[in-house]
Image (cartoon, rainbow, N blue to C red):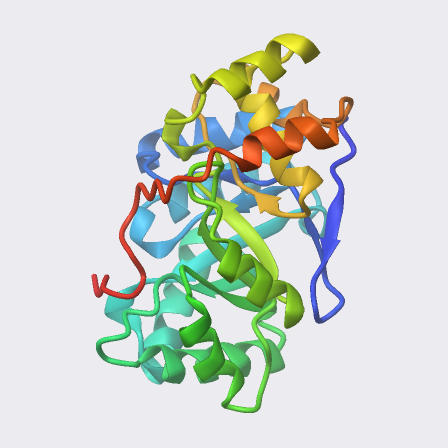
Length: 275
């Protein structure tokens, strides 16, 4: 079994640095995919209400027979459920679909700044944390300006900020902001949905190490201290994405990957996306 490194969050909770994401996996296929991930050694599973596959994740977790304390489960509240009471209700709905007694991490999926309801949702997440219904709380797709508003409330600082991050979109301003405030940066779409796998620098480094381009990029993330949630539904690739702990990249190789930045966003922009 691969020993996955962990990141200690700002409230002392340890989170696996490599998790398995189920974005765009249909619910009917999710149980099989998550089962393959658990068999490969993943213990952190990332889902969301809007993915429509929390039930499939729950079926796989239940069937695995793994002790609950060995698992780290993340879900997210969708834009339509922002607001204090709506977020509490959304949490209960997610928990029921997952068949769990608590979540390890609960995130606000997008800030949807047009309404500013994310501030009310943050208060709801703090209540869930205080009640022991979630071990850590955080956000997804938040810019520094949104994080500042949450921190200004004077309560908890988000433990995690999950953002689109890969060699073509490195979000250096967000990473710097997170680091100063003790927020762990988690990368969704860490492989840019395959858009950077054919880059000459990536291919050359992969050849030098006898690895795949995807493994090289995922290793780049780990070197820089980020949490990652690669996604695949192919068992061999699920395992391959986890097999990245027994090689290292040189300073020059890391720099060549850093040089691939081109503001290559594949998803919506958090400043304007309101669902």
